[in-house]
Length: 270
Image (tube, rainbow, N blue to C red; front, side, top):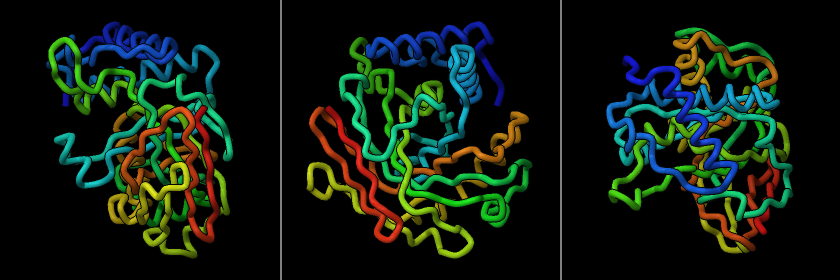
């Protein structure tokens, strides 16, 4: 798929997203200004934002995969997942406390994180390759936060997947912890979790909800990034995709996510 936007236009979009993130002020969706933009344009905008972060001192520590469920893909009218970058300033410690007012529309998702020991690259990366390259898997939570209006107040139009991709796939934070899991010793599909918000069970799910196997998401990402000449590198953390719906996070909310034998993660919003 070809690009419509120039590099300079992508840089402007990146600066707009950074301003919205920094000022905690929602912006208009990118497709309001660039209605013909393509998925490749959206990723160019995302990459421009990542480069802006790195130029400001941030470090790339990994990647996230989103829209891994069939229901979400149908809702967004796409037939593949999307992805974004993980940066060091996004890491929140297990048991951490964050201010809800620092985000525009914060939500929490339940995931597994793959910590890589070896490089993954190429057009034919398989699930077996992912398992062989993974040092361990750990329970994780993703904090998502879109910087554009869900529904534009000016024209009543909803943002699209192109807008979300340009916005680093709405990635805003990540928590990981619990017990390291050897992916060659367990069937990752059957790892489950119970999400409680303020002691009420809001979501439950199995990792099979991620493309039937969360390792398949990592293999897809390695193949997709190969188109851009990018590899998944040793030491990087890859969020494989959520196997619950996103749950709203409000000031005063306390999240406890129980992964059974693999540990419990907590996150509090003030």
